[in-house]
Length: 199
Ligand SMILES: Cc1cc2nc3c(=O)[nH]c(=O)nc-3n(C[C@H](O)[C@H](O)[C@H](O)COP(=O)(O)O)c2cc1C
Image (cartoon, rainbow, N blue to C red):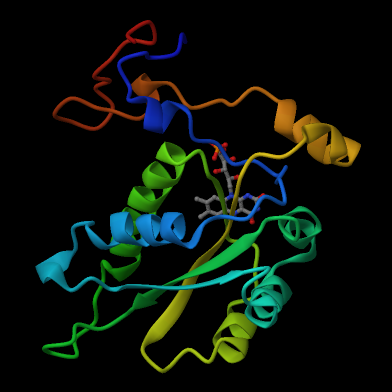
C-alpha cells in the first residue's frame, strides 16, 4: 500500500534507529520531551507516568545503571545513545488506592507524545521492552506501587555504516505495517472499514 501522505510528518518521520551519533542532547530539548509527555490524557487526570533518564556525559553513573538493565541484544547498540530512559507506571489511583487498570495505557499515551516531540526536534527514540524489570526496580530504587514499563534510547541519528552487518540490514529493511483492512472494522468485527487500496 502506498504511503499515506495525509498522515502528519511527525508520525511519518519517526522510526526506531539503532545508529546513534555521540552528539549530546541539550537538556532543554530533553525537557521538551517530558513536557510533551506530561500533557497526555489520563484517567481522572491521574498522570501515572514517571520517567528516569540519564545523560551519558552529565550523569555517567545513572546512565550505567540504566544500561545495565538492558538485554544484551539491545545494549550492543543502545550503549552509543547519549541518553537512556526508563518509563514507569503508578499502578493505583492516588485518591482511592484502587487498581489503575489503564495505567500502562496512559504511560503509553505519554510516551507517544514524547516520540512526536522528539521527531520534531530531530531526535530518535528507540523503545525497548528487552530489559530486566527486576534490575530496573532494584538499581533505580523504584518505590512500591510503581512498575517499570519500557526503556528507550534517545539521540541524534548516527552513521549506519558503523553498525555490525546484522544491525545494518535491520536498519535498511523496509518498514512495514498491517493493512488497514486487517485492523479497522466498521460497526462489527470482521466488517473491514477500508479496502486494501484505500489510502
Ligand atoms: C513495547 C515495545 C517494545 C519494544 N522492544 C524492543 C526491543 O527490546 N528491542 C528493539 O530493538 N526494539 C524494540 N522495540 C521497537 C520495535 O521493534 C519497533 O517499534 C517496530 O519494529 C516498528 O519499527 P519503527 O519503530 O521503526 O516503526 C519495541 C517497541 C515497543 C513499542
